[in-house]
Amino acid sequence: MTFRYLVFVLCLVSFSCSKKRENNTVTPQPTPTNSFYVGEVKPAAAKSCFAGAYYRKLVSSVDEWGGIGGQLVLPTIVFDPSRINPAKPTQFLDNPSVYMGGNMGGQETDIGLTWEVIKDENGNVTADRRAFRPFLRRTAHSGSGQVALYENAPAEARYYWYQGDEVTMSVKIVANGVLRFTVEGAGKKFERDFECGGYTFAGKGEFKRVNAIDQVSNEGKPVQATRTKVTGGEWKASYLYRIVNGQLQETPFHDGRYTDMRCPSANYFSIFSTQIDRSKGAEKIEINGAGI
Image 1 (cartoon, rainbow, N blue to C red):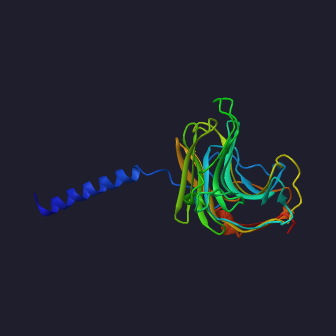
Image 2: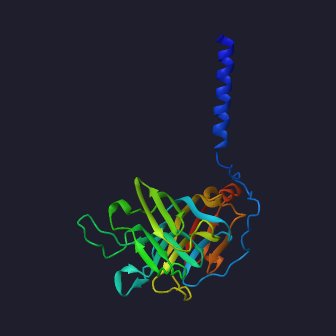
């Protein structure tokens, strides 16, 4: 075999291998601008608020979405000292949270981090709330017979996050009827597969991200006046997972993909973002119960 012929054969092999790898790549994602998939459903112009809390919410359209994720900085909390919980005098009636979730198959989920009690270094449960801990909530689902469920991550130091920590969080379908929640940052990680019968690869649903000041025993009622505020909360990026040929494909949660909600009204919120921020689902958030 001549040297020239050998080089020719090697080039053919190299070209063939290169083409094979190229054909095995996934479909390219939309660029991080206001681009859309063919046939993508646009979000509603507005949605009604659910009473009971002060919250900033971005919610997608009802479409072939399979989850949501993002990188965020946890907020700093300043509690209203007059809002003491009479049943638990070391705690407040306001409780900040940052979470994700959605609604698919008629089943609502709220999954993320909430300000919670912890176990101290001696293994004792604290009377006051001291850290953000993971929580998972689902409503009942008639199709699967699931009942409503709420749970927290174990009260262990490896699952505590604190004000100002930067974390990555996601909630996505990993099997029909199963959501995987992952939160990671500050050298810690929590991951949990959560059975939610309404969430399937063949279904259509909406997904959300929320920054809130929740209020104890106030769900469905008008918000209670408070001077509690959360500052320094920031989403550095957020993204949806699109179901494409049975696989999840990450794509930016840009400002053409969400309904902007500030509940109960916009005067309790300061939201800062540039157009570049909005193209990647990023923004800085302050919530003040006394108004901005």
